[in-house]
Image 1 (cartoon, rainbow, N blue to C red):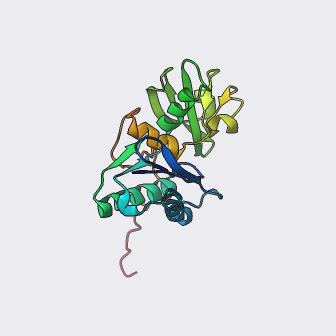
Image 2 (image 1 turned 90 degrees about the vertical axis):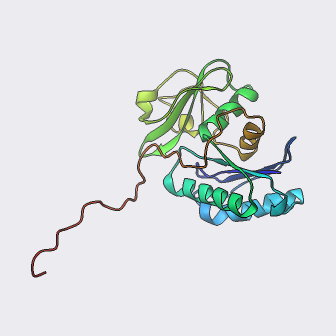
Image 3 (image 1 turned 180 degrees about the vertical axis):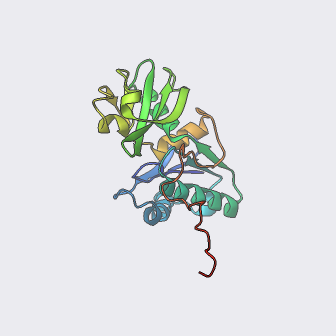
Length: 215
């Protein structure tokens, strides 16, 4: 049993794959609640499938790119579960998961892009061939700098229609498709390390005020 989840976008996605097909999948109801919703969603898909944690044989997790806080929740959970259960953990670029689903469901033909929201009026973007193989990226970019008439999957296309007028589904990574990608080895499998592309918003300053004599 492969447990998969992705926390690289505002909605958490969790799924369970039995080696042949996805047997359970859930998506969070409220955005930006990764810490509160990931564990209950994992418990729910296990219950839906009638299995317990000890039945798991591997973990798959989306490594982003995405916001620091959301990615950290998913990756820490993945590494912790893998350690406790003594099972392997596989990371996959979240944009690659969107790309494979777009190809396999027929929403794209030929070359295309995947763009997701990077906040700060920017997008995470990568280019793919007609088989869903990544040919460039991922990068963080201003929408205008990545503008294209090619089909664009991911929520970035819906957010910046002026730069990406040909928006196609899917709009976010699915844990079910993440599980399929890992099971079928459709994308490069990575270590469970975050793909941030830029520094976190909240960082400790490396500059400290000097202590003045007599202070």
